[in-house]
Image (cartoon, rainbow, N blue to C red; front, side, top):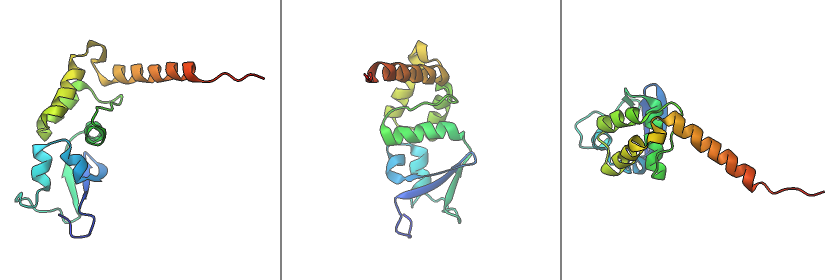
Length: 137
């Protein structure tokens, strides 16, 4: 691992967006690609600047990275299930991540992340309206 005492931290530039995360978070994805890239015995040279560069969509990576942190797909309005499936193949992700993506793909009400994101936002807003205490004067 790194020799600077921050050996659990990794810097990644994915599609021009810089991410700093822990090896533990990345390991939670069970990605054969990332595991091999970061392994000391991988045969790959460590980048001189310490930043691993990956030519993939940064928004999709953000969703996957948050899955590694939280164990669920926290979608945004720019990422579709098809995009997640493509990157699951690229990163060779573990079955638990693929199962979550498959569940999203099979949900007709969430055929893309935008619909899902908007529905969740509307639900939170409705719930907030119902839980706001009334003020009596």
